[in-house]
Length: 348
Ligand code: NAP
Ligand code: G4F
Image 1 (cartoon, rainbow, N blue to C red):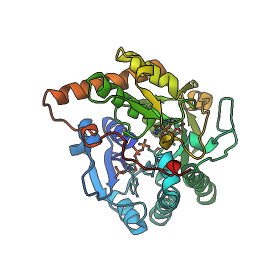
Image 2 (spheres, helix red, strand yellow):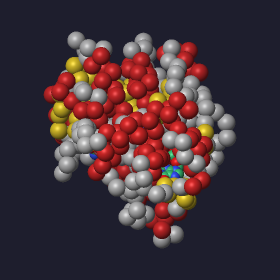
Image 3 (cartoon, rainbow, N blue to C red):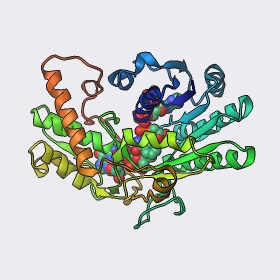
């Protein structure tokens, strides 16, 4: 039986990947950090919480990462943990560098010291390309990070290549474009929209405040994207791959479609609020997954319209069940809207 260690197992991708690897009969380990309120709802939602092994560790604590690798002795390590919210990286650039950047160095060093034969997946990102592009982006397109988050991820990307070339690691960068699902964090724009549409639809909220609605993203479906991570580690040679849908849509299009799914007109509810605008935004991201199709045999099935529908219908169904008194693992009831959030943009 193969074993895998997942950092970030409590996050969106970590939970779907744990589910995927369990279906492939892996022994699955994951690290989690101590929080004042436990955060296992995604693992419980997918009914995998009781089937995995959890190890307490934190990316800012190198010795805990060494322990996690020693305890699990995995064949494959999927490094997904990060401060992953671009907006927060402008508010907390130093913490983001520590976790998202140096955290990757800490786990690569743990592998180098314990067993360099362990295969390594790095959660790289389309944010590496940054602002200023206007055509599809492939593995050969230039990087121009436009946030503290993407600068930290660029460090992780290069370190992964350096350990591959310098120490002969089987280490891959998955350059994943945005991927969403009903397990997406509530602060990311897609889930913020699908959750707000559901609440507005039930009369629980009156409006939705957003930032830059002109930005375009290439949005795919997270459960399909985690399969590509595994495929990368099953190849003969390690390499870097773009994972995307080859389509992009504006935030406005997402809003329009999401309200439409609930039979509402978005223009009656949506307002622009400068708190949610970033000092620099990435205005265009569209991928080109040709290499992944050719080498991994990977292709997305769920595209934009279906994705929006899945997310809105699930949030509608959850709020309906909640109103009927059903209790199930879910994040939204503990998260009010973002009315009290003060960002640096307010001072600008
Ligand atoms: P997510 O839902 O925000 O999950 C992030 C995970 O990292 C959580 O499990 C979180 O734990 C953990 N984490 C954060 N700080 C940590 C620390 N100091 N020590 C240990 N664990 C820590 O992110 P995601 O959407 O699943 O994304 C997974 C990875 O892919 C991230 O690296 C992200 O940057 C990258 N990525 C995501 C996308 C996308 O569209 N989703 C696209 C490209 C790349 P808690 O639960 O305790 O907070
Ligand atoms: O949903 P977002 O916060 O995702 P973003 O910044 O694209 O980052 C996500 O995808 C990356 C891959 O490209 C990952 F690496 C990263 O970890 C994360 O998963 O914002 C998407 C767009 C941005 O242009 C943002 O300015 O939506 C715009 N937006 C407009 N109003 C908003 C809002 N974003 C958020 N979060 N909240 C708003 O109110």
